[in-house]
Length: 502
Image (cartoon, rainbow, N blue to C red; front, side, top):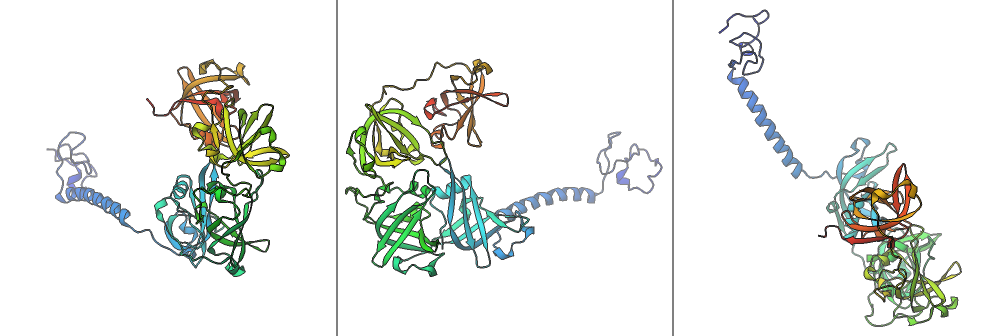
């Protein structure tokens, strides 16, 4: 043992100096220089292990508190800029029907207003949360009592928005309402929600490119009222067959004004009911322009005239061409020919999603039921339900067949603007403005397959998934030095093996 103290060690505790070599070791229990064990006071060892134990217990208690702590409920008027990103709960009355914003057939966001008596706040839900609420039918409506929790976003201008992050943290207590006579609805009820019941007197549908809403005149014993709803609501109505003069309905609507006139706004298709929906009775020929028909009369394409507008007919012919929508809300168009005559058949994404084995193919024989219409001076047949389209032959007479597939590595810049066909496995897609990009890989390499909304709409892309083996035909394009394959139509993408299939 070395008892010789080095300069400066006289005032240092013995526990910090190695008793063997005399060097400073601090809190170490073994000397790093000579390896000798350094004796420490019991209190030092105790506090070392006590700190470790207390830290572990503290973390456990913190975890338990986080799991059991109730989300603080606040008043809207109490929100301050320092509460940005705070996770809180509010309770109040819905002051405006929830508005859903869709893209490619799916709900991308949802917005509604809540008033708790001290102020009003906008609540937003996005993507999966918004879609979950819609799938469960839990869309807040004017007058409903809600409790909602989410994170606050306070802007520099003082605007406050709450973001709903967990669908289960929205609790809705629907307002119980009695049927309100149409004659009693006046300016004093603007901004409220009521239930009305009556008979349809008239149905006015907007044009295919119009941004105007649907208008429906309803009458009961006390008076008349005008119910309005937008195209996205119309697409969700399962009983379009009942949108006809003379049918009875019951609807929950919001009362508002437009150009000093009272309007009854239908915000959700689930709020519309038909109490006397017939099981067998045919629909009147005076149905609204967009109403689905019953069994239309068989007619030759060449016999259809503009004077037959609004009449339900059925035709049989061959698919001449298929034109995807050119605008986000434009319809799909299928040109059906019969002999020397042809007519455009139009329908929207809601029909496309349910066609399945009846999806039109160029050259295939097809039977179509629909309502005769005229758009920009041209005759067309409007289809409102997938059951109105039937593919009659399994082997079409003139189907566009893709060319022989080549390897991805064989595609070069010398082939720009040329059409080629490749076979490969799809990777994870990524969204771009106006479309989606799927990477496609085969044994020789990878190429980007670009699916533009105007050419391959969202309803058609739903059948594609990462891992699926597909045969794709398209035009070779280049973007920022990388080659791309751009299909012109949905029919240019053929799924040969579903994702996950063995």
